[in-house]
Amino acid sequence: MEIRLDQKRALVTGGNSGIGAAIVLGRADAGAKVAINYVSHPETAESLAQGIKDRHGEALALPADVSDPQAVAQMFARIDEAGGGNDIVINNAGVDGAHEEVLDVLTYLQQTEQSDGHWSQNMWLDGRPYWDGAQMDETALPIL
Image (cartoon, rainbow, N blue to C red; front, side, top):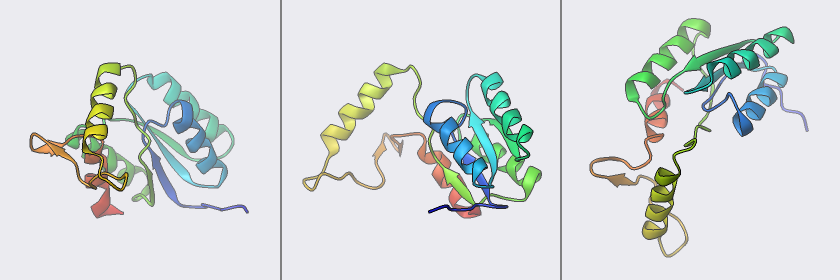
């Protein structure tokens, strides 16, 4: 089954490498206009965007740390300016190289797992979302 995304606008966080880059290419191949979010390696994001443009697609590389609410708001403002909003958000950004932080998150998740194997939908620690990527979702929701 082929799903077409013609004229849809998709944002992929952490979209400049690995699984994120594959998601970006898949959305572009399906006809979506893609915004490629990255926090490091701008040359990789720009190269990916240029490759999509070379195939007659539309792509925009956007730097933003998705754990920073102001950076996320600015990223969505740039998306809006470039193409009139956003239809799809794929929140793929992850922690790259901060192994200690990843272990902290995994330990926390193990400790807060509920008896049915799930976790609370909103996990908070010290008055803020434990996983800062939640800032992305909180900022995106009102404009989707």
